[in-house]
Image 1: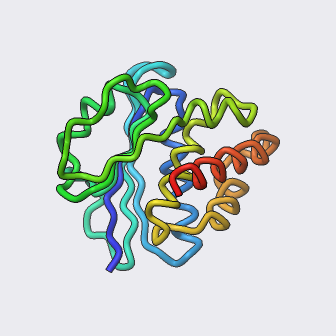
Image 2 (image 1 turned 30 degrees about the horizontal axis):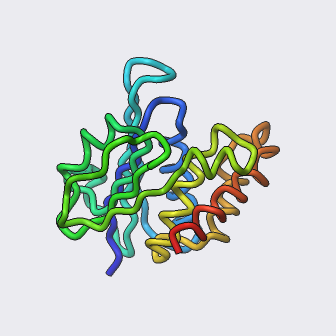
Image 3 (image 1 turned 135 degrees about the vertical axis):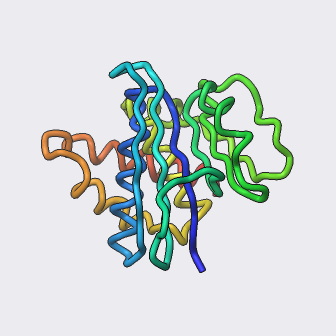
Length: 180
Protein backbone atom coordinates (compact mmCIF):
# COMPACT_ATOMS: atom_id res chain seq x y z
CA UNK A 1 0.00 0.00 0.00
CA UNK A 2 1.31 3.43 -0.98
CA UNK A 3 1.05 6.26 1.53
CA UNK A 4 3.80 8.83 1.43
CA UNK A 5 3.71 11.97 3.58
CA UNK A 6 5.96 14.54 1.95
CA UNK A 7 7.29 17.95 2.95
CA UNK A 8 8.77 20.30 0.33
CA UNK A 9 10.57 23.24 1.99
CA UNK A 10 12.78 26.17 1.05
CA UNK A 11 12.92 29.93 0.66
CA UNK A 12 9.97 31.72 -0.90
CA UNK A 13 10.63 31.92 -4.64
CA UNK A 14 12.37 28.52 -4.86
CA UNK A 15 9.18 26.91 -6.13
CA UNK A 16 8.52 24.44 -3.33
CA UNK A 17 4.78 25.12 -3.40
CA UNK A 18 4.74 24.59 -7.17
CA UNK A 19 6.76 21.39 -6.82
CA UNK A 20 4.20 20.00 -4.39
CA UNK A 21 1.34 20.99 -6.67
CA UNK A 22 3.01 19.36 -9.68
CA UNK A 23 3.60 16.14 -7.76
CA UNK A 24 -0.09 16.08 -6.85
CA UNK A 25 -1.15 16.57 -10.46
CA UNK A 26 1.24 13.87 -11.74
CA UNK A 27 0.13 11.41 -9.05
CA UNK A 28 -3.56 12.17 -9.67
CA UNK A 29 -3.07 11.51 -13.38
CA UNK A 30 -2.03 7.99 -12.34
CA UNK A 31 -5.16 7.45 -10.24
CA UNK A 32 -3.71 8.15 -6.81
CA UNK A 33 -5.35 10.09 -4.00
CA UNK A 34 -3.53 13.32 -3.12
CA UNK A 35 -3.63 16.29 -0.79
CA UNK A 36 -1.62 19.52 -0.84
CA UNK A 37 -1.37 22.10 1.94
CA UNK A 38 0.84 25.13 1.20
CA UNK A 39 2.37 27.26 3.95
CA UNK A 40 3.95 30.64 3.30
CA UNK A 41 6.10 32.87 5.47
CA UNK A 42 5.16 36.53 5.90
CA UNK A 43 7.45 37.62 3.06
CA UNK A 44 6.56 37.11 -0.60
CA UNK A 45 10.12 36.32 -1.70
CA UNK A 46 13.02 35.17 0.41
CA UNK A 47 10.91 34.16 3.41
CA UNK A 48 10.17 30.55 4.21
CA UNK A 49 7.74 28.38 2.31
CA UNK A 50 6.77 24.75 2.56
CA UNK A 51 3.99 22.44 1.61
CA UNK A 52 2.70 19.15 2.86
CA UNK A 53 1.70 16.57 0.26
CA UNK A 54 0.17 13.16 0.86
CA UNK A 55 0.06 10.60 -1.96
CA UNK A 56 -1.85 7.39 -1.34
CA UNK A 57 -3.60 4.48 -3.00
CA UNK A 58 -6.48 4.97 -0.57
CA UNK A 59 -8.59 7.81 0.73
CA UNK A 60 -6.62 10.32 2.82
CA UNK A 61 -8.34 10.94 6.16
CA UNK A 62 -6.00 13.81 7.15
CA UNK A 63 -3.83 16.00 4.98
CA UNK A 64 -1.76 17.19 7.93
CA UNK A 65 1.82 15.89 7.96
CA UNK A 66 3.54 15.74 11.35
CA UNK A 67 6.14 13.05 10.56
CA UNK A 68 7.00 13.05 6.86
CA UNK A 69 8.15 9.86 5.19
CA UNK A 70 9.92 12.03 2.60
CA UNK A 71 11.38 15.49 3.00
CA UNK A 72 12.78 17.65 0.20
CA UNK A 73 14.67 20.69 1.45
CA UNK A 74 16.15 23.35 -0.79
CA UNK A 75 17.83 25.52 1.87
CA UNK A 76 19.65 25.10 5.17
CA UNK A 77 16.99 26.62 7.48
CA UNK A 78 14.52 24.06 6.10
CA UNK A 79 16.97 21.24 6.76
CA UNK A 80 17.37 22.47 10.34
CA UNK A 81 13.61 22.72 10.80
CA UNK A 82 12.38 19.48 9.22
CA UNK A 83 15.18 16.90 9.52
CA UNK A 84 14.29 16.03 13.14
CA UNK A 85 10.71 15.14 12.18
CA UNK A 86 11.34 12.70 9.32
CA UNK A 87 9.96 9.26 10.08
CA UNK A 88 12.59 6.64 10.89
CA UNK A 89 13.53 4.88 7.65
CA UNK A 90 12.29 7.87 5.66
CA UNK A 91 13.95 9.77 2.83
CA UNK A 92 15.66 13.15 2.86
CA UNK A 93 16.60 14.86 -0.41
CA UNK A 94 18.59 18.03 0.13
CA UNK A 95 19.99 20.71 -2.15
CA UNK A 96 23.73 20.23 -1.76
CA UNK A 97 24.40 23.30 -3.93
CA UNK A 98 23.56 25.69 -1.09
CA UNK A 99 23.24 23.59 2.06
CA UNK A 100 26.64 23.66 3.72
CA UNK A 101 26.13 21.00 6.36
CA UNK A 102 25.44 17.31 6.01
CA UNK A 103 22.28 15.93 7.62
CA UNK A 104 22.93 14.34 11.02
CA UNK A 105 20.29 11.61 11.05
CA UNK A 106 21.60 8.08 10.52
CA UNK A 107 18.21 6.35 10.57
CA UNK A 108 17.01 7.82 7.26
CA UNK A 109 18.10 7.56 3.62
CA UNK A 110 19.85 10.76 2.57
CA UNK A 111 20.35 12.00 -0.99
CA UNK A 112 22.55 15.04 -1.71
CA UNK A 113 21.40 16.54 -5.00
CA UNK A 114 23.07 19.70 -6.38
CA UNK A 115 19.74 21.19 -7.44
CA UNK A 116 21.00 24.70 -8.19
CA UNK A 117 23.97 23.42 -10.19
CA UNK A 118 21.80 21.07 -12.26
CA UNK A 119 19.40 23.92 -12.89
CA UNK A 120 22.10 26.40 -13.92
CA UNK A 121 23.85 23.80 -16.08
CA UNK A 122 20.65 23.55 -18.12
CA UNK A 123 20.18 27.29 -18.54
CA UNK A 124 18.00 28.33 -15.62
CA UNK A 125 18.70 29.78 -12.21
CA UNK A 126 15.12 29.09 -11.12
CA UNK A 127 14.58 25.37 -11.72
CA UNK A 128 16.13 23.89 -8.57
CA UNK A 129 12.64 22.68 -7.65
CA UNK A 130 12.50 20.73 -10.92
CA UNK A 131 15.80 19.05 -10.04
CA UNK A 132 14.34 18.05 -6.67
CA UNK A 133 11.27 16.59 -8.39
CA UNK A 134 13.39 14.64 -10.87
CA UNK A 135 15.43 13.14 -8.04
CA UNK A 136 12.29 12.32 -6.06
CA UNK A 137 10.70 10.46 -8.97
CA UNK A 138 13.83 8.33 -9.41
CA UNK A 139 14.03 7.52 -5.69
CA UNK A 140 10.27 6.91 -5.29
CA UNK A 141 8.94 5.90 -8.74
CA UNK A 142 5.68 4.68 -7.21
CA UNK A 143 4.67 8.34 -6.66
CA UNK A 144 4.43 9.14 -10.38
CA UNK A 145 6.28 8.56 -13.62
CA UNK A 146 8.52 11.11 -15.27
CA UNK A 147 6.07 11.16 -18.20
CA UNK A 148 3.17 12.03 -15.89
CA UNK A 149 5.29 14.80 -14.39
CA UNK A 150 6.02 16.20 -17.85
CA UNK A 151 2.27 16.24 -18.53
CA UNK A 152 1.69 17.89 -15.15
CA UNK A 153 3.94 20.78 -16.21
CA UNK A 154 1.48 21.68 -18.97
CA UNK A 155 -1.51 21.36 -16.68
CA UNK A 156 -0.05 22.85 -13.50
CA UNK A 157 1.98 25.82 -14.70
CA UNK A 158 0.39 28.95 -16.10
CA UNK A 159 0.39 29.17 -19.87
CA UNK A 160 2.66 32.22 -19.87
CA UNK A 161 5.37 30.04 -18.28
CA UNK A 162 5.05 27.09 -20.67
CA UNK A 163 8.06 28.50 -22.54
CA UNK A 164 10.18 27.26 -19.60
CA UNK A 165 8.92 23.67 -19.84
CA UNK A 166 11.70 22.38 -22.13
CA UNK A 167 14.29 23.62 -19.61
CA UNK A 168 12.25 22.32 -16.67
CA UNK A 169 12.09 18.89 -18.31
CA UNK A 170 15.85 18.87 -19.01
CA UNK A 171 16.59 19.75 -15.38
CA UNK A 172 14.20 17.05 -14.11
CA UNK A 173 15.74 14.43 -16.38
CA UNK A 174 19.28 15.44 -15.40
CA UNK A 175 18.47 15.08 -11.67
CA UNK A 176 16.58 11.83 -12.33
CA UNK A 177 19.74 10.42 -13.92
CA UNK A 178 22.01 12.00 -11.29
CA UNK A 179 20.59 9.90 -8.45
CA UNK A 180 20.44 6.73 -10.49
